[in-house]
Amino acid sequence: ARQFFVGGNFKMNGTQKDLKAIVENLNNAQLDSNAEVVIAPPALYLDFVKQNLNKSTVEVAAQNVFNKPNGAFTGEISASQLQDLGIKWTILGHSERRNELGESDEFVASKTKYALDNGISVIWCCGESKDTRQAGETIKFVENQLAALAKQISESDWKNVVVAYEPIWAIGTGLVATKEQAQEVHAAIRSWLKQNVSDKVAQETRILYGGSVNAKNCKDLAKEEDIDGFLVGGASLKPEFVEIINSKQ
Ligand code: 13P
Image (cartoon, rainbow, N blue to C red; front, side):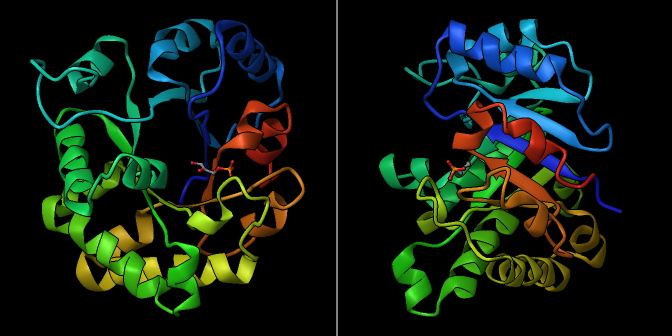
């Protein structure tokens, strides 16, 4: 069985004071010991969050990492710097970076490959816009994103990849995908992996849903066969994140 996984993407939010309160809330909470939890603060606070966290089931992730070793790359952070801080995860390919910063499918795939080759596990994000969904092209669009990734990573790389399906129209809008909408795309992702990578990768890869997940809607979504957890934005900054972590209990 796939271990339930909950990521918290803090995005560009939080001061030391805020982050300390968020971490203390997690430290003091009763968290489902079967759930793997990864929180992603802004890069500036990775070490601060790591130092303050004392829960063995909670790891810290970066929100981005570059595809080259250390060097003249102003503003970027390297996989070896994450290693230096004991950070074992990164998010890559979030729609905010794809759209606001122009990251292409190929660039995201190359960063994913570089991170994996350098010992960093990846929460790799995909998902369609409202226009793409209205045009009935959601699955085709997500399959193309997956194909760009599969082209650059090997079958054995997938064991360190968690896929996050995050429909753009659901992110930060309060408009959560229905469990049927999410399940349909998750099943399509799994079936694509089966046909294009391997049955083993399809069976073992965790597929998370992200987009307006909160304490109220998480339990129903978590019951769907192909929803193996969540990538949570806004609600990961709030005490209700604990209820989302515990949504399988
Ligand atoms: P919200 O949970 O705020 O909709 O954000 C989802 C997301 O983008 C997580 O990466």
